[in-house]
Length: 53
Image (cartoon, rainbow, N blue to C red):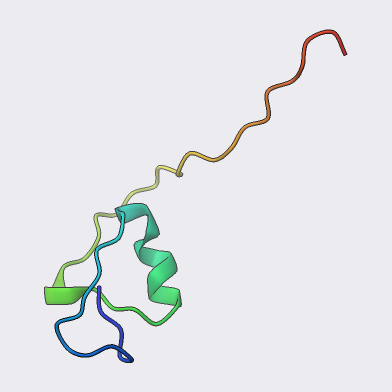
């Protein structure tokens, strides 16, 4: 991905799950590549209940 505030050629690579977040921050996908559409949510933290409460 690239950002207008960085010099040309100074790109970054991010996980596919993060692409949309970076796009909201002004980053754009390089070389016309688009992330694969996925309706699968990313794994979040899950609280494990303590036994004996």
